[in-house]
Amino acid sequence: MNYDILAEKIYRIVGPTTNIRHAGNCMTRLRLQLDKVTPEMTASLKAIEGIIGIHTADTELQIILGPGAAEKTASALKALLQRERSAENHESCGIGDGEKLHARIRARNATPFKLLLKKISHIFIPLIPGFIACGLIMGLLNLLLKAEPSLGSMAWVKMLSVMGNGIFYGMNLFVGFNAAREFGGSPVLGGILSAIITHPALKDIMLGDEFLMPGRGGIIAVLLVTSFGAWLELRLRKIIPSMLELLLTPLLTILIAGFAALFILQPVGGMIASAIGNGVTIAIHEGGALTGFLLGGLWLPIVMLGIHQAMTPIHVQLIQEYGVTLLLPILAMAGCGQIGACVAVYFKTRNQFLKKTILSALPVGIMGIGEPLIYGVTLPLGRPFITACIGGAFGGAVQAAFSVGSSAIGISGLPLTTVTNQPFIYLTGILTSYIAGFAITWVAGFDDPEETLKDSTGEKTL
Image (tube, rainbow, N blue to C red):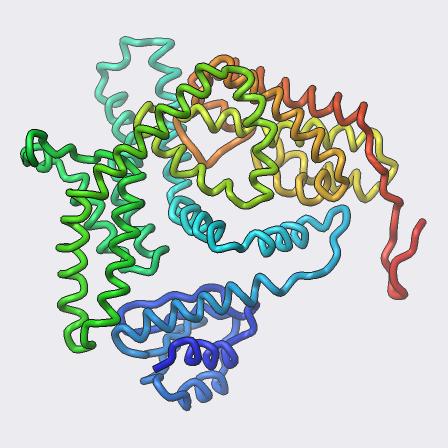
């Protein structure tokens, strides 16, 4: 069975891409969340060779394919959907066309390496609400204990501490589960492999002259182990007969990947994690304000290149190892530089549509969501994007000079203040980025776009 052809036949019936909200699978079924399901659609699908049956539940269409076939068809369909969506938007973009411009940049960035980084990002995105909740609890609790240390012995404070550490206590399992799914394996097997390298009983097992270390390598080791486990599982599914697949594939995956994890992958992950932690710490402590200036200024171009997703596991690793990530407060300044630049544009421009765009996007920008300002204002204007980056660089220099760290990820801008180890310095960095972004943009200027009005006859210049 050619599963690429099968996926294409299914897509022709259930498509276009705008009708398909989500594509996934279970052990025997391809599960599609659709905007619209019609009787004609299900009838056409039943006629396709390889489809055993169809079941609908509201807007979910379940295509019964059998063990192995469901997973392979889902993978082929996801790849097809990604290609179709990447090719959809080729229209020119102007001021305010943030969504179109963002889509074009994402399509341009769809190289294999950047798609791998995107997978890594998708592993952590579902965890962000947990990072925010637990990070805020710990941030507020730390402020409380600094003001009144005697409260640390109280039961309710200890309970809050447990709640605040909850995300980190189960971090490896959560990441392992999501990673296996993103790399095409069974999520539960990824969770099990993560549990194996985290299991406290490892400390009683000696290999050579050393005892094994539970959790060594942190998130880096988990990503190595689960990606290998998913790769192995997919290879096993191709060579194990279908009648034995459900029995042998998970067994061999756990045995082979488990031993590979303990003997090879976890030690390698430990070395990589230590190198990352030491490298970041030395760079910021030794380079100080200069390191912060460079990182803060280069962050938005890095986002444009699509390689910013690689930072998420590094943030998590730093928080696991040191309790805070020194990188996030520095990088958050890039968005703050955008605020200052856009305020300068607002006061200098005569374009009323541009003014409205800035006013509507400023509140969310201050709260750390910078995409509307970046893709709708500064990037289309050109020069203000560069001056905004410089403004962010000045704020990054402040954060690095004082080693400001964040105990959580997933938030940025003003809300990040509550989870930093030095809130006053962090706010000083924000203010520095605002002022620098405004001043440099005001001096550098920009080409003010002419006011336009679209009517039924086309586009007219006012």
